[in-house]
Every structure is written in C-alpha cells, then in structure tokens.
Length: 474
Ligand SMILES: Cc1cc2nc3c(=O)[nH]c(=O)nc-3n(C[C@H](O)[C@H](O)[C@H](O)COP(=O)(O)OP(=O)(O)OC[C@H]3O[C@@H](n4cnc5c(N)ncnc54)[C@H](O)[C@@H]3O)c2cc1C
Image: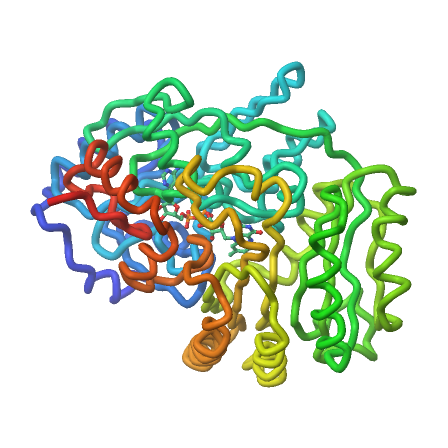
C-alpha cells in the first residue's frame, strides 16, 4: 500500500518534472528509487533506527559514471545531496530529507595485490567484506570492530580498531582515493596529486566530494588470539585503574579496549550471567600464540577471577564479526564521544555512576586505545588532529524499542556532560551526533583553518553539506 507519509515529502528547491527524473533514470546504470517505489522504504532505511529520513530520490550508483551523473544532476537542480556508503553513521548523515541520496552500496569491488600488499576498495563495501577478501591472502586493512560498518564513512572519519596500536588508523593506511568533485570532475588524490585534498580526506569526512575508490596498505594478519573477558561491575573500579597503567606498556601487537556493559541475555553467554552488569576487556593479539600468552599474562595474574573468559584463537574476520549479531540494523542509537588523555580516579567514579543506571541492556561505554602507531603520525600530517589522545571514548544509548529513544538520548547526554570535563575537548568525528559547529571545530583543533581552505577550493558552494560540515569561506 502507498505510504501516506511519502505524500508528505516536500520536493526539492527546483521543481523536478517527471521528464527530468526519467532522463536521469535512463542515464544511470544503477537504479533510481523514488517515493512510491516498492523498495523505497527498504532503500531509505539507515542502520540507526532513531533516524527517519525521506529522500526525494535515491540514486543507487553502479559505477563512477553514475556518481558523476548523480552529482551533476543534484548540483544542476539545487538538490540537497547526501552520500551514503554503509549507512552506519550515528546521526544518519548518509541520507537527507527531500534531497538526493547518492547511494554507493552497489559499488563493492575489492582488488587485492598481494605483491605490494595494497587493496583497492569501492565505497559500497562494508568493513566485513574487506576483511573477508583480504583474509584469503593473509592480509588485513586496519579498520573498525563491527563487520557491517561501511568502509567509506569509517575511513573518511579516521577509522580505529584492533590493528590501530600496531599499524595506525585506517587513514594512516590510505594511499590514494579517487574522488568525484562538486563540479563533476573525477580526480585522484594522493601524496603527489591533489595533496591538499588527500590531506583533508584523511579525517575530514564527506566534505570534499564522493570517493569512488580507496587504495589501502594491508598488513599480515591471519589467526589472532582474541575476544572478551568479563568481570562483575563490582570489579570495574579496580580494572579501570589497572587498565590505565597496563595499556601504555603493553606490546603494540595487543589491542585491548575497555567496556562497561550488561551481559547479553542470549546464547552463547551463560544463562546465569544474563542481564548482569559487567565490565570487559576486549582484546586482539596479532602474533604467535606464545607471545599472546605472555602479553596477556598480567590480565590473568593481576586481576580478580573473571566471570567469563571468551578469548580464543580465531580467524581475524571471525573476531571482526563477533559483535554483529548483537547489533542488528534498526536499533535505536544515541551516541556521544570524546578523546581522553588520562583516566583519573574522579572520571572513573563518574563512569561507574552512569554505568549503574543504564537505560537499557545494550547501552554501553567503550574506551578504544589510539596510542602506539596512531601517535607516531603528527597532528597536522592528516586532518585527524588528536594524535596525543590515549583513548577515543564512546557512550552509546542503544535499544530496539523506539519508545525508549528519549531515555537513551537523555542518559547518553547526561553521562557525557558529567564526564566531558575529564576529556581533551574534541571527539572522534564518527562518534558524534549533530552537535554544532563549535564541536566540529573542537574536533579539528588547529587543522580547522586548513580544512576550510581545502573546502573552499574543492567545494566552494558547500554542495556536500550533509556531513559534519566544514563551511567554505563566503
Ligand atoms: C555498530 C557500529 C560500530 C562502529 N565501530 C566503529 C569502529 O570500531 N571504529 C570506527 O572508527 N568507527 C566505528 N563506527 C563508526 C563508523 O565509522 C561511522 O558510523 C561511519 O560513518 C560509518 O560509515 P558508513 O559508510 O557506514 O556511513 P554512512 O552513513 O553511509 O556515511 C556517513 C558519512 O560518511 C560520508 N561518506 C560515506 N561514504 C562516502 C563516500 N564514498 N565519499 C564521500 N563521503 C562519504 C558522508 O559524509 C556520510 O554522511 C561504528 C559504527 C557503528 C554503527
């Protein structure tokens, strides 16, 4: 049945005639989806069920030519343009109301050169698809920790995950990107061609154009020793205090992040622990098993007996998709982040207070390490400024029930307000809702002015503004 809300969609600034739309559609090798089409509702849905946007047109591009066609059509008709990779963005910046969504989800080619250990990836690929493809060659590209995340948005925001301490952020492994600019031209950005654009793409988000391929450096990664270890929340203070000392001297092959959570009430978690408030250290050791045992020895020797030890040897893609079943598409998400240099006793008390009052079983706080190789890149070498942080913190209110949206947001905001004074000021771009210009400036620090200059050069009319927006000079 035709959804009445679709009728309520206001159309773009320029009146689009049916002829114009049909011609646009004919020019695409992919698909053009409109309100009223059978797959419109499925196509407009985002990963975050809290965000409900109603685009005028969704251009599912099949290739670079389609992207150029879509950018030109959007610009010539004054349409608001959103760029969608994996659709995982927290505030839903992969879509827009009334405008044109350039949906890249059909563009999934991944080419691996095992000789040079480089990987060319199209922007509709998920991180899990990249992991599966590279794993066949005993390689991996440093990225995030949930397989369904889009590689494109993750990369453009920075990208941190299990390989970051040893090999850096995703952007630290980006060698080149092909980009369709606001005027519809296609350029290659790397250290020698459009170096300013290449600098800005590494952390500056979707501000500069539509990236149609990324080339990454990959690293030898095969079977890892990895997984979570859980303790009761009553041990969380001791574990956080221990963890802040342990992390800086741990070998870089070991990545251990900290979480305040609730034990999931599903198999394979033991029934007697379901719903219990817990803290966790979730680790990945990329190296020989004997070395893993040595690196993890302090966890077993110094800390109380855990409730559950889920660490095991596993192929890297298995680790990367470990949490996916707990986080299906369509949950309600509200998240807030900050960069953290030191974890003080006072900050730990705030964390414990809010962990005791989570609004739902899925709500969580994670501290992701970004030391080691991430810190060996200078703060102005890429747009990603906070190279001296130790952790990227995220607070997430998460639940399947839309009726809980307000409660999830209130908890996350109050938690963040209370703990923010112990942070460095800015947040990881990919862990922000729409929080205003001051927050974006705080995140880029003294890289902001250069980002404005690059934006002004490459997108002077701010065609690409559905993002954590860097405004061009007037
Ligand atoms: C469950 C979950 C786990 C996560 N874990 C991690 C993690 O471990 N590490 C981490 O670093 N991040 C993580 N993230 C955050 C993630 O990096 C962001 O949500 C990111 O925006 C997802 O990218 P996407 O392509 O799926 O997003 P989309 O919603 O498709 O796009 C987001 C934005 O990226 C830009 N964009 C996307 N594709 C392009 C393109 N081809 N060209 C230009 N601009 C583009 C656009 O501005 C768009 O608004 C996680 C997110 C979720 C939901």
